[in-house]
Length: 351
Image 1 (cartoon, one colour):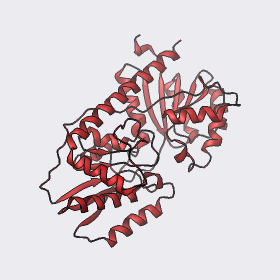
Image 2: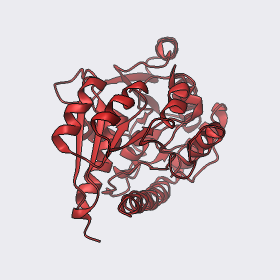
Image 3: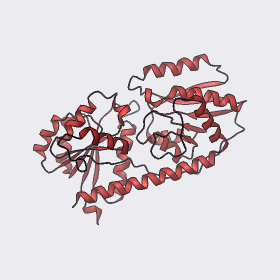
Image 4: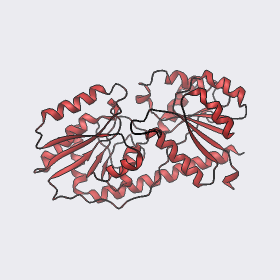
């Protein structure tokens, strides 16, 4: 099929203030949508990505582009708005793409109420980006008027896998750079990963630790996490342990920073893809993930056990190239399947 003649797709995101410039902030949500958009364009699909101030701007974007499908990234449009949008654009199919599993969604206020309202709106579907959330949404929609196979559709993340050569660890370097990047949130589990990294360098011996995290985005009651990270770092011997904060950067600069790490960590309590981890894997950096990351297979890692996390760090430190090759293979396989899922979905919409 000539995909240039396929369904027109418009991705819509809500604008966030960017502390580093006028461009849309390079969040995981923005990158996720942009990666899928670019992949669809590469495959000949007529796709556009728009960032709007609020839901009152959606009508204008749809009128200008005249899409067949509008994908609203994340749960931010009030359900009542779709009654108005359906009257204005009766042939448009609307998809609300959900980027969180239930543990994270529990911190999102009205999300569950809205999701159940969405599936009763005309021409509106809900699309989780994880298979676990697909099952969970289907479960809670039993008894509603939703058709579970039509009104709820799985559309996973895509990531452009241009892989760098696996990075060997410089064992002669007097310190080790370990990253735990991403927004400061309780479910990101940064504190225990810092403790595990401290334990790791103690076991390695004769090494200093430089532990790298982000600053500038503290979310979902993450302030106590930030305070505890800083408080622990202040109590540790500064000649052995250093906590380094990096301001939020655009994606290209973040990839460059990621490439400087010896080991990257993302031992989280809840993930649906983990773009931060993918960023470091494509840079060839040894990576410790967790079972929550759908493309990561080198577990299991006990997210609430610092000693277990330490042991995985030690194993990666001794076998970095093997770790990188497995992660790069697994990530590549996942996104190849994602591409097939997206293109198959759009082809099915032509029938």
